[in-house]
Length: 240
Length: 380
Image (cartoon, rainbow over all chains, first blue to last red; front, side):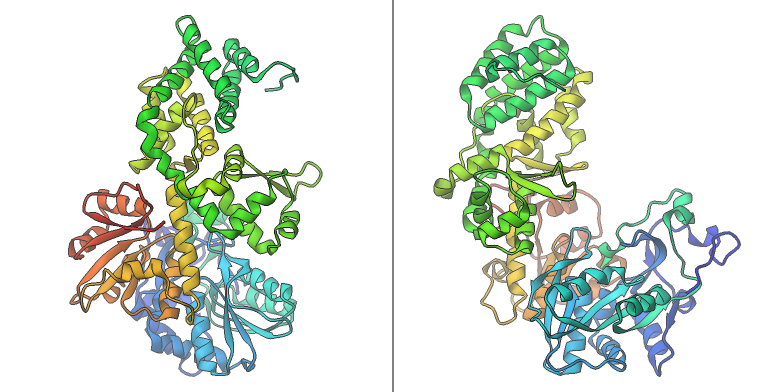
């Protein structure tokens, strides 16, 4: 996914200097969130984001070290069980959860998506929860559940950038002697990077939404809000 | 400071450092004295106090400030007694937690690598890492990088950890830590600030400035903060401090919530403590920041329909009215005394909610000072 340059790009400084986070407008949702072109999905995403107020606009620091103008608070989306079930259904359209699978989620809002996928798959899969570290990144140890050696594992999280935050979970699967059957996330801000990560790892996976061209994810030194003296909310995961 | 190895006694070394009058030597003296205190070498401490008493009038300002701090703390010892309660939870924590106890006992002979601890204590590497982090926060263990391999971190007991190890069998009544002396004067001030919920480096420096000359304050404050960690009184991160009692509370709640992640597991008394306060037909609204993910997941997994979690971002996304239903009575339960203090003391979106709650509670360990109107849900 291409990233706009600040100078002369769609992200004029007047547009991005926001001192405090706020809920994005419906127009902003349409402008920046790109849903996969699957039947009913774009409408579902737009409706759910608008109703839940889950898309925030402000100045956010991501765990990967980059800054962004928008942040999806997945926990707000997940509070509606029908929306959550529909999201799980879309993710399960491309991936089969084996009957003996373990669904591995971090101790974060990603849990709720993993639980919805487990319930929707109705395949007898069990759930395992990985710890998060002090900065709310997934850690390479289990908080709850088990990953028996040799079992297929479906790794689930809510929103990632390129998927680097999934690495500890994928490593955890390897530590246990199990195999990653798939990696499923609701959103991958850098969809291209996420697909590349899946390719490098040779694992199946899917995501439903990504950041559109008007949603910049930038290195801090290129962040206009930082240049204007606004402190980012770091880590934005604190909002989940 | 580089100092030649000598055969003189600790008392002689301390007096030599104090007499030099330099800031660096004074800081080293304070650090040494902290170690003497933690190791209960009262003779050394008493000798230093006598020496300082005789030298105060003609000594440089830094030494006079040091002497004043020593005497203030010594005279404040009786008043400091209640703060001993802050240490009791640590002793209980060590005794109650098999992992903590195993690691402390394993480290008794000396520092080790985490892999050696795991093998000796028969704990997983992950568990050892988790326990070491908790023990380090409690100032019972310190970790240093290996000289040969910078990636490797050795763990060893702090002086406080050594005392806890020595008293594990008696720890049910709390570890008797001697606060009588020296740098603990400023540590005492810090402890008082912690108990009032306004401990920070800035507050400590303001308190010290009432007694010391300004140029000495920063150095003494730095030494006091190190001494505070050494004495197990408080942990300072940036400009915030939490007492060890509060750290223990976080661990107790974290563990309870971890158990609650098993939907088929037994009841979790710590959680039921809050649920028992629910008004008839109403809700318990848990106000949490540090444990909010775990509360959130535990409530979902256990289907605790009478519990609702409220985190600060819920105001941002306008979810408060969905979480706290307008027409249902509720009580508010904080899971952190500092959070309860902050939201009672300052304007925040939570203030309106506080007014609507039938009662306001806060999880705490015995002895915690809570704001007026907030009732304690005490956990051991």
